[in-house]
Image 1 (cartoon, one colour):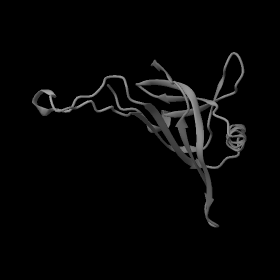
Image 2: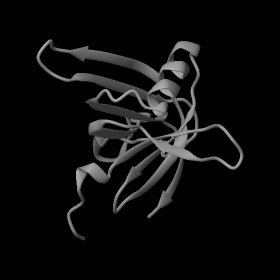
Image 3: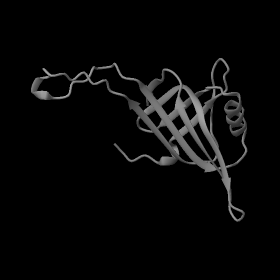
Image 4: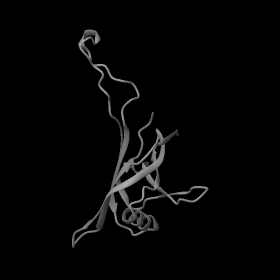
Length: 138
């Protein structure tokens, strides 16, 4: 397997139409995707060898996404702001090169803007999964 460029990791926002089209969120410099599965501990006094036992498939799954970048005020930025203020959980597509694409609803849990007087305006985004996610291998 060859190394992948970080710039090829993409966060895309759905237009909500049918058929669905995804637009890459502009200006992002750094992205991070985290997939999580909470475990359910079923260990008891008679567990073999006193090893922990987990109930397979019983835990809560979640995904978290963060991104930071330069504010460019694109149409995607406007759609993000709109979804945040409306409290919506729009569909996103997360593209991880050499791995796959994850599609599903995410709540925008943080949307931050910053800037120095002698530098560029920046922004950051935090998404939390808000339902089942679909995975497609690339």
